[in-house]
Structures are given as C-alpha cells and as structure tokens.
Image 1 (cartoon, rainbow, N blue to C red):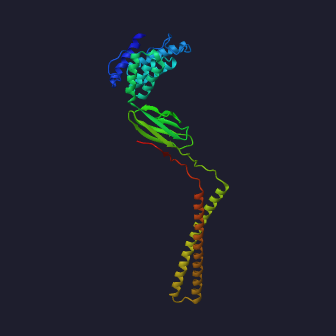
Image 2 (tube, rainbow, N blue to C red):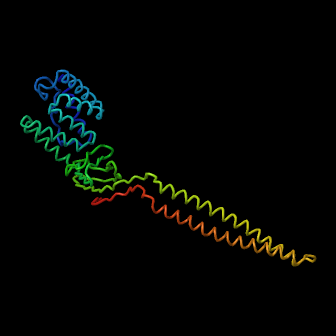
Length: 324
C-alpha cells in the first residue's frame, strides 16, 4: 500500500509546481497516510467497514489526482475523511483544493490540520504549513454580509454561504462573485462584488416585505364594478342615439330649406317640416347632454375604483453600505 501513498505525495508536489507552487523549494512527500486500523482514525467508533471503504476511496482519490482529475480526487478524499477522519488527510485535501483554486477552503483545511494534529505535527512540517498559509491567505479575502431582517439565505456563486446572521467575517476566494440574498416573503437582492487578495468587503442589504397582489373580492367591489360597466354601456348607447337623432335633425332642416326654395309647397307642409326639425334638434340636444352626464359618471366610478385598488407587489430593496 505504501507505493500509492508515496505516489500521492510526489504527484501533489508536482501539481504545486504546475500552478505557482506554494513552496519555493522541493519538499519531501506529504505526511498524509491512508486510513488504517492502527490509530489513524478517529477511534473505536469507526466500524471496520467504514475503515475499509475509506482505504478504498483514499486509493481511488490518489489515482485520480495522478491523472489530473482534481475535482473527482477531492470527492474521494473528502469521502474517505468523513468515513475515517485521520487529521493527516487534511493536508492532502488542502493540496487538492489549491490545485482547483479553492484557496479559502485550502486555508480552512490546513488550519484544521494544524489544530487537530497539535503536537503530532512535527515542528518543521508546522513551519512549512504556516508558510503555505501566509501565501494562501493573500489569495483570499474577507466577506462580511449584513442583512435586515435576520433569517435570510445568502449564496455566493450559486453555493450556499449560510443563513443570517452570519459570522462577522467569512473567508472567500479573491475574484468576482455573485451574491444573492433571499428570504421567504421578502424581495430578493442580488449584486456582484470583486475581491482582491486581502480585501475586507461589506455587503449590507435591507429587504422589503413582498406584498401579495391578490385580493379577495368583496360584495361592494363587485357592485362597484357592475355599476361602472353599466355606466359606460349607457354612455355609449346614449352617444350613439344622439348621433342618429342629430343626423335626422340635419336632414329635416335640409328638407325645410328645399321646400322654401321650391315652388308649389304649401305653408302647412313647411310648418310640418319645421316642427319636425325643431323636435329632432331638441331631442339631439337632450341626448348629447345625457351622454356627457353618463360618461362623466362612468369616468368617476372608474377613477374611484382604481384609487381603492390594493398596491401591487413591491420588489424594491435598499442597499446600505455596499462599496466597490
């Protein structure tokens, strides 16, 4: 089994050289070892079945690392660690994170390695790891997220960052990030931030409650809508009637003018046509007035209904203290 443990150390060191290695000088093979039943696990609580699966996954992760499949290697190594958490594996997990550009996670793994290893980490190894940490921390930044109200979910680049209130400072990789803040019943907030190494950036947002656009129809609202419809319908009908009677009145006046200019028409005929024209004209005036009145009533009912309607959903948020 030792041959693939040594292969992991050699391949990991080669990988560091391919990506601006953390160490400036070549090192010996990493101290991480495959899980075993001789003290490299968390204790007796780990079953032999878990230890065996951890050894298989560790071997698979080592092989994948040598093939340059860093993402798959990380999955296998982290699964092995979850089954049988030997602190030495954290060193190798940190190296894979570094190959993937997960500098914040590499920092977390190395810090955990030193903490869990304690006095079991040789002094020279501790000095190397602390040197690595100084370099890695320059590739990370601190993100501070403050949200009102609490209980909002925060995601960074589509990955959950936690639920507010969050720790005062959370380490993340330097670079460009999409931050989304959401909470049920409130309008969501999204922004982009660009973090340089060593930055400390604050993202603050006050979410506004999202009002429902749905309302329950009341009897009075239904009645108001019905009368508005009736008013507009009546206004249309009266306006149409006024147009018809207006045309008839104009025709009657034209007939009267023709009779006055035509020989052979009697006074009685002219009187009858004149009376007809006056009647039609009067009727037209009445209908025009009625049309104006009913249209005004319909407009009043329409405006009154729109003013009493509930406000639509509010999507706005306020952004306090965000700096670029």
